[in-house]
Length: 167
Image (cartoon, rainbow, N blue to C red; front, top):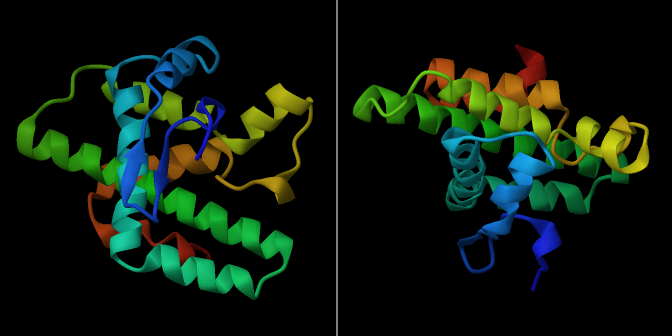
């Protein structure tokens, strides 16, 4: 069970994405991210968590987190979330390539949404200061970067956030 304050989320236990439609109004009014691709980005990000579960990535991260410090648990969480951002970008890449559905300004809407929900912006808005060690989803810049990477490259190999520091 989760309240509407949680916003959209993926539940690995039942393999479902839960969307509180009121969140999309909040995405516009509170986070300043509007447009159809801003909403599609949020949905694609949550569906990407399902892909991660199907591929066993979510389970591997959970296992690693059981043996990790609090700081390392957060870092693993960030890597998982940034990979979901990259996969959302990959979805946008293929949606455009195969169906030509993007309009002028759509990618900017998605990037604005990714930036708006960065841990740094949320922490600054809610507590007045930023604590990078407390990040669980990544900074605005990281989220934009990984969405862009997925959109530009359009392949799963580009979305390996777990090996990103070795490139």
